[in-house]
Length: 89
Image (cartoon, rainbow, N blue to C red):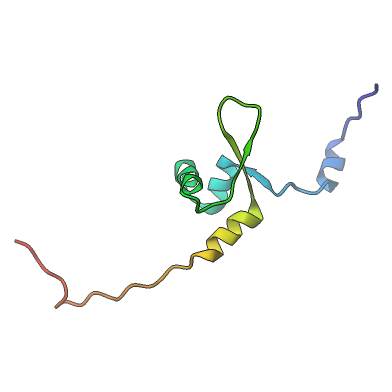
């Protein structure tokens, strides 16, 4: 068997993977990795666990991350007025 090596120039031509690690996905979403994994446990994000490991190792697709962001838009709240605020002294 002969091994085939890929040069650095050839690597730049290869398509980038859409699969992200948990830390890469957290950076992509601009949240902490801990928050990302919490969202996975809550079912807010689609994630894929790799098999054959003692610990769970997660992989994420960019399409799934984008879809999760678009699925739950931010709902604006009513602005507070001076009369609606209660001060406790």
